[in-house]
Figure 1: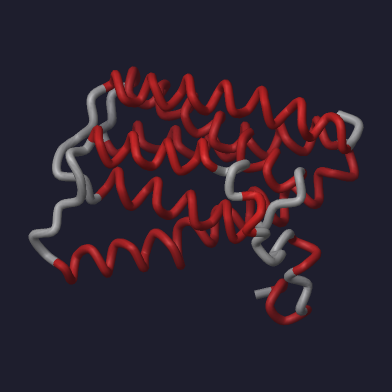
Figure 2: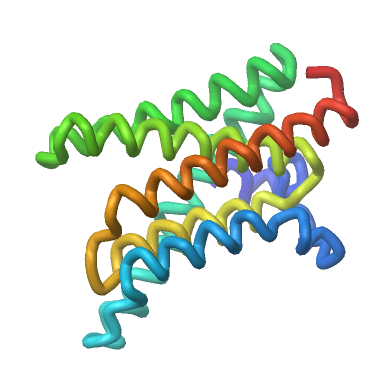
Length: 184
């Protein structure tokens, strides 16, 4: 509400998407393809369920989480330095996923999800500091959740490990790129 009322969208990284940077985000597209492959595609039995879940993931979960963690929190923590902003916002984003334990998820699956969420947080924070729009992170976040929730079956851990490796390598590459632009 604050961002909308004060019209400070730009201050919180709501920028225009630069089409020339499509190669930069191709690893995220690759991750989404791995998810779709691992879950054997989308469950299309109920079109209305697909639409409702997509809207929920895009306009509720991803929009709120990205605005909080990559928008407000990252922007606020930048006063403490980019390194602190990247790590603290990403760690807090990851820790929120520990709540899955309360829903009955196993400890092993939760630890894997925490690592996955930490890497996603690091990658998306680095993309923001590279000058990318938060709209891109909202879109990736929503599709990541949507594909996982609406897949035909649960993906095996092998696909999750592959994604973790891809995200880790991507994070290192982004780290080098961002480090050239700002002092980390």
